[in-house]
Image 1 (cartoon, rainbow, N blue to C red):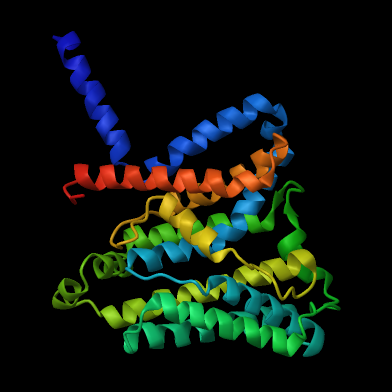
Image 2 (tube, rainbow, N blue to C red):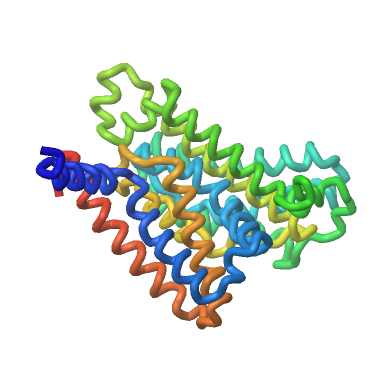
Amino acid sequence: MSELKSPEKKSSLFSAFFSRTETGVLLPLVILVVIIGCVNRDFFGVANLIDVLRSSSYTFIIAAPLTLLMISGGMDLSIAAATALGCVVCAWGLADFGLGVIPSILLALAAGALVGLAKAALVVTFDLPAFIITLGLTKIVNSFILVTTDGIAVSGLGSESFKALGQGKLFGQVHWTIVIAVGIGVAMHILLTRTKFGRAVAACGGNRETAKLAGINVTRTRYVVEIMVSVFAAFCGVCMCSRFNSGQTSAGNGTELTIMASVIIGGTSMMGGTGTILGAFLGCVLLAVINNGLVLMHVSTNWQNMIFGLILVVSLFIDKYRRAKSGGGL
């Protein structure tokens, strides 16, 4: 009898595995790790693995709150601009305004919050398309940075303690940005899965009218997630400012689509309503592994976009299969 049930059990396990939100990113990640590790054993070196996690940490600091935004049915192309703004404003605080480390960081976060508030007002209150609004904000913020800095990085920060944020290591091995990213990820996971606000976020992405009828303040929920994303993007800019010890006007340049794709590859639906923080983390790690692996295998980085595109297409097929199995339709 056990032999007769065996195929059913295998089928059940197979279906359960593919029904997981993170499956679309976990499979290619495991395959890539095995291939890269076989080609170059240096990939499994402690220093290299930490470097992969360090690269992932910067994108995940933004990807974690962005997951909440996309689950709520939103999108944001202004995250790279908010990152650059946070980087430059923090440098201004330290180098030009003579502020301390904490006030300079808070000033940068306030600048990010201002961008998020403007975005939320236009997208939520005035019901304008997020794609165009966030693209327009990107142009405005980047132009503001270039006009006020003449395109020159802000240097002369003069704070050794500030460098510890982006350059320091825990126990001399693990970069602080990795620790911070993990902390943010855990906090966002708890916020999404264990709180009333997290349920409101998912409800907004599922059906906003139904959410309103259920007594959820949809406007407030959307405002919070919009502002949250910009604040964390600005904080990522602060970390970059610390890492390079200067306010780089191009900090985060071109990362918006990569970070959004990491979240999508991680299983967050583009239609909203579903997604996980773990999936977003795996998506960020996957892209970091691709970049790192291409270098170790001495493959031209020109192949990066092709590999990344193929993984994105495959993950969308897996997402389609998962939604069909769960009764979400095709």
